[in-house]
Length: 328
Image 1 (cartoon, rainbow, N blue to C red):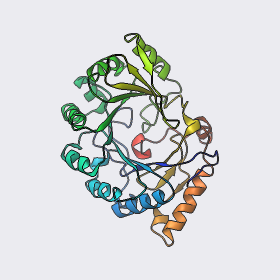
Image 2 (image 1 turned 120 degrees about the horizontal axis):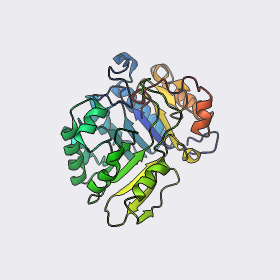
Image 3 (image 1 turned 30 degrees about the vertical axis):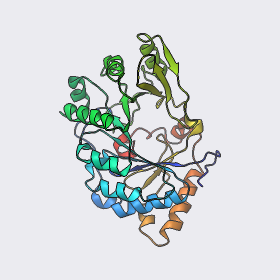
């Protein structure tokens, strides 16, 4: 079992399989993209599975596959098939922009991989294209509807961007009200590859909630797991739910049970923290399993209690990275 220095059980791994993405969302990276790493700097498929097996052996029972965009990696389904064989791994989830998932939906269902988070920051085609800098709205929307109708546990991740998509907050709730789906509104974070900087935000989770309450008066607070990053609600008469994720305000840090490993091997104990070690060469060396465990234990043994504490340790460079390279 992995227990950090604040006595929190770490049983959830966010595993990035690539830093590449086929969209160019303006809150994530500049229009020209970022310096993506070379292939030999990424984990191989076999290494990703070996690493997953080691982590499950240490008590991790949930792995979320992230990127970049995971399905950019053409061998992703091979990894997912292998992950389903791991005893003790109770939840395999995927976060995707849903541009490339279409051909794999049937097999994902057969494998029992049903928890899919779809990043969708606008329901207006024009807003979508302005934010993503790509013409993929119909593909994303059609794949989202297919995932819902095929019975997947779907959550939409909607990053609230001041002056860009706030007019879509209420319409997306109305659009999804007849579906068994969760729409989660995230505060914006400045992990954008240097495309812009900011120290405060206007659309805090409180302001998002007040905006929703301006239209819907009967809103019920739902119970959530202790380790949940979102505060969840249900609007009377809606089949769907909605959640608020204070990703900039960081009010959920005290119960953090997560560890991130980037596609290049960086161990990231908090989005706002510097990588504490790199496992790529360790995994490729002798006594790999023993050494990986030792370095992971060392990393979580000095985990910051909150994102604010983590940020203070490298405040001058904390926002230099793009979310696609951190792993979401």
